[in-house]
Length: 389
Image (tube, one colour):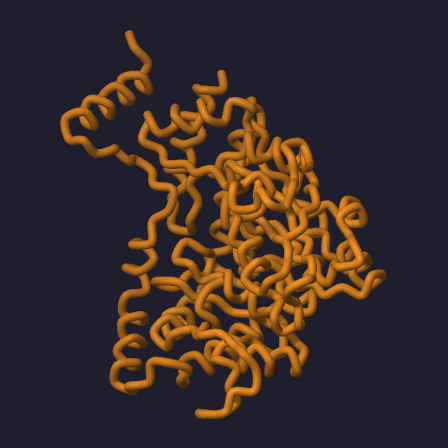
């Protein structure tokens, strides 16, 4: 008699052949459940924006900025059009541009490096700690040059980087720190919210994030009043009033509708992060004795599991197997930034950052969102354990 998993996989494959559509039993992410739970609150806030008639830099953005700054233990927040532009404008606020270099992790999203390029600076990379996937502070010195102006520590998957060690290097060399917290809303480093530890912190509100809008959006947070003022100029064409532009800026403004949605969702963020942590704990307990490597939460960290990332040398085979069983997974990220064609001109050959390259070959993100049910996690784990046996 064939195992149930084999029969289920064959049934799924037969349906796919007939319909031409992939069958998904457990999605990687599902935004619809969250909306249905908050529909009345969200719809009421959006309707209020339409009644008010202010759609750009109005009262919702102003209120959200104050609320998110307080949440992050920062004095100021400046709403922007995306997480990428939050990083770019944070660098621009520090007067970083052509001729400067900025160091970041080699295993991050390409958009971190693109933000550096957007201001005319050059990305440089450092390798990662293989257990946490965060920037390895011991690798920073080798990447420094007289042109280095800033470090962008990334908090990947919701795991805080080792900020004390990174801050020590930055202070020794008089460098700015811009935290890439785009995947780490609410995460804590030694009890302090990420984003508030460096000179500035950047967050994305892409819909899949722990705190997501219904489109692109971002914010930069800081406790430096001068940097906050410059960010406000930069996001609005460099102007200080309707017709007076004091610097060359950008057009990067968080919309009122997105701010209204985010204000509702912010009230639930800690609750959702606790749900993610509980689901991650269930994954880890169940997968502990399998052949895959489960995530490690650093001793200094409160991980918020934007992604639950396992690791396997047979990652691609596992990815296909889970897809055949109706379980969606993703690879974050299969190509390290220094090996992307867009950054070939930087001159980094394969092997430059071995830990980053190994991780990019092996990491696989399992389904993770607050509304994911425990029985769905159990099904993912049961399926994965059969593969691992």
